[in-house]
Length: 168
Image (tube, rainbow, N blue to C red; front, side, top):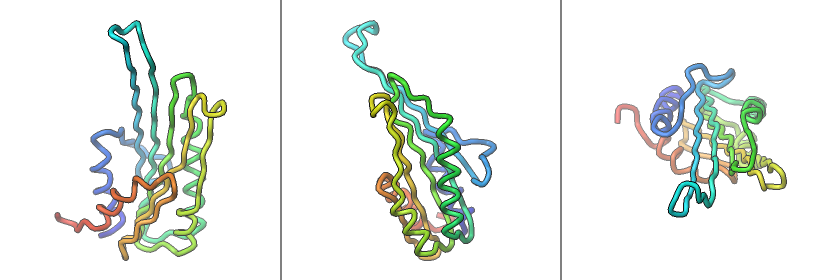
């Protein structure tokens, strides 16, 4: 499976709950956003117990081969693109930034960079929420999936993509 085919498969799993961008920012091949607002009331709407906003900004990079420098640049670019869109406030819970790499080959040092990158930002000491950087990479030639600490929940999704054959 080529990186482009894997991207199409992955985007299908994101279309239900995410807004896919028609014009993704360079150098990414696709981007998606998720916004959720939750509230809880006590019998009537005017007796609001709590409300919260949760967001996710996802950037997809599909390349035949990626160097460590390329992976590092994409991580920085995604973080810098998402940060201005985040609006912490009283009801802000979290706004995560996710970067997914789909590639035929990923060097060991790039894989190590994905695994060990740990970036978080709290707003007003966490009172106004936080942001985490979630990373995931699929090496399509071997089927290896690599994620960072905040991206552990991405492992199953990426493993399903890497094990799927075209035409299924």
